[in-house]
Length: 123
Image (cartoon, rainbow, N blue to C red; front, side, top):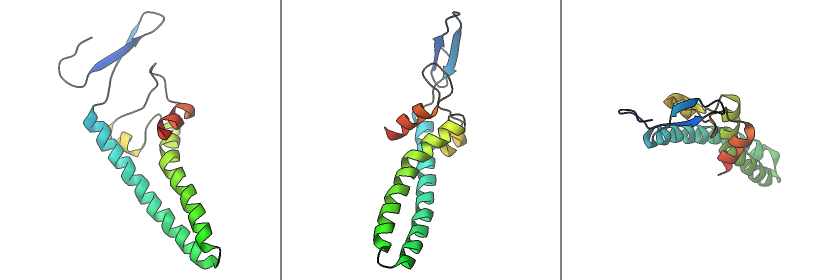
C-alpha cells in the first residue's frame, strides 16, 4: 500500500483477511523522543544522586558504601526501569514519545506488555 508523502505505511493482515495499516515513526522523531527521555532520566538521576549523597554524608563510616550501592541501584532503575515501566503503564509511551506523538506496539499492532518493554529497555 503506497502513500503519497509522509512516513512509510506498513500493515498486517488479520486472520479475517483485513489489512491493518499504520505509519512507522521516522528517524528524526525517534531521535528527538530518545533525547527527551535521556534528558528526563538524567535530571531524575541528578536529583536522586544528590539525595543519596546527602544521606550518605550523614551516615558516617558506611556512607561511601551506601552511596555506591544506592547509586548503582538507582542508575539501573532509571536507565532500564524508566522506559519499561512508562511504556507498560502509559500505553507504549514515555515522556519523549508522548511529546513526539509516538507509541510502541508489538509486531502485531497490539499494546506493549511489560515483558516486551523490559526487553526493549535492556537492549
